[in-house]
Each structure stands twice: as C-alpha cells, then as structure tokens.
Amino acid sequence: MSNNLNLKLRIWRQDGPDAPGAFLDIEADDISRDASFLEMLDTVNERLLGDDIEPVNFPHDCREGICGTCGVVINGQAHGPEKATATCQLHMRKFRDGDEITIEPWRARSFPVIKDLVVDRSPLDRIIEAGGYITAPTGSAPDANDIPVPKDVAEASMDAAACIGCGACVAACPNSAAQLFTAAKLAHLNVLPQGQPERWKRTEAMVETMEEYFGTCTNHGECHEACPKEISLDFIAFMNRDYIKAKIKNRSLASQAR
Image 1 (cartoon, rainbow, N blue to C red):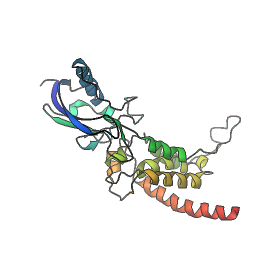
Image 2: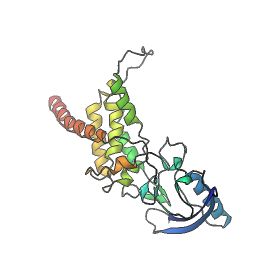
Image 3: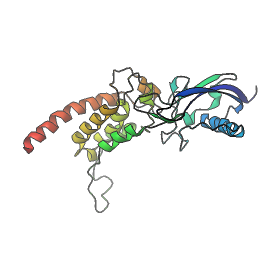
Image 4: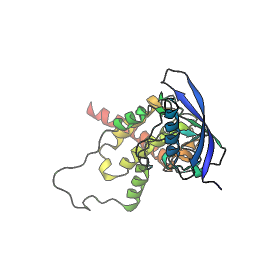
C-alpha cells in the first residue's frame, strides 16, 4: 500500500466578512499519510503559489494542540473526524486515498470570516475580559500549603482550565452558543479559594457578556463532542447555578450599598 494519498479538496475561499465566498476545488495528490492536516494544507499552498494562485489562509500557531488557534470544520465536523483532537493534531492517515474533503471556517454569526478559513473569535476574548482578575495577596512568597486546596477541587479546576479557547463548541452548536467555553473559563477560577472574592461579580459579568454575542444553550451536547479537550457538560450546570446565586447576591450587595 502506498504511503501517500490522492485527495480532492473543497476549500472555502472568501476575501472578507462582507465579500461573497465560494468553494475552490483542488486536487491534492501525493500527500503523505504521516502528515498532519495543517502540513497537508502547507503542501497545497506551496503548489498554489507555484501556479500563481493566492494561498489559502488558515488559522494556526503552536501546532501542538495547546493554543486553540487551528480550528476549521472538516467534512461538517469541527476539528474533523477524530474525537478529542485539535485540527493541528489530526493526521492524514485518518483519511483514505481518493477521499473528498470539504474544509470550511467556523460557521457562527459571532465569528465573522476575516479571510478564507480564518475567523474573528474576539467575542471569546470579550468574555474573558469581563471576568476581570482574582484577588491574591502579594508580598513575600507564601508557603506552598498556605492556602490548602482539596485534591478534588484542584482537579476540577485543572479539568476546566484545559479549555484552549478554540471555539469548536460554538461552531458545533446548532445555536452558536458559547456556554461550554464560558463555563470552563469561570469554573477554573470559581472553584478555587483564590477565586472567591470576585466569584459572583465575575460570574454575572462573564455570563451576560456571553449573552451579548452568542446563542442560548438547549442541551444538544454537540459542544462536548466537538471539544478537543473533552470539557464536561457538568461545568455548564455549575455556571448556571453560580449565575442564579450571583444575581441574588449581587442584588443584595447593591441594596446594602444604598
């Protein structure tokens, strides 16, 4: 069996958010099965340049599944066919010789296309910005166990902090909701002792910023299925509970301040 693949690609091309877009059909021959998906796109772009065709713009950075930059929709699936895998970690051995592969950007109103496969995901940054900071005493370095954190709490925080902010949850959701992303970014602070002073203010601000840009969660669960880090849906329940508490507590604090 040859170690190389001959593929037919349908790649979305679009000059900007207000420009019309269309699929470009490309023959991608002699692609190594050991290449990553992004390396395959690099090879295609080199060939396009050789034919005096503008290369395809696609998002990428670390190429190690850490930064969350690389997300595209592959054959209708965010990040492609391999579960718990970012686009940059997907390898061409997951495809067969002669396959037709359709490659599109994240499809969400809140993620306008910048060019080709690159989208503007800054609304996710607005949610993080709304969360503000945590209060942590400064000065001399505290003892390692000065603030005891139970093991289950530390593990829950780390599970939430695994979110790389790629936006696959939004792209996969029929409602373009960002509850899984927001819930993860909230939980990794809200469960820790260091995150308690701003917990209720942070929760209200982040959830309501999210609602300005994204759709409503209706529990389809597609977000979890598309997430390359398999963030649990339980964090959404945790966020919803904290939001209800935040509205009550923040209203009470506002009344006391009058």
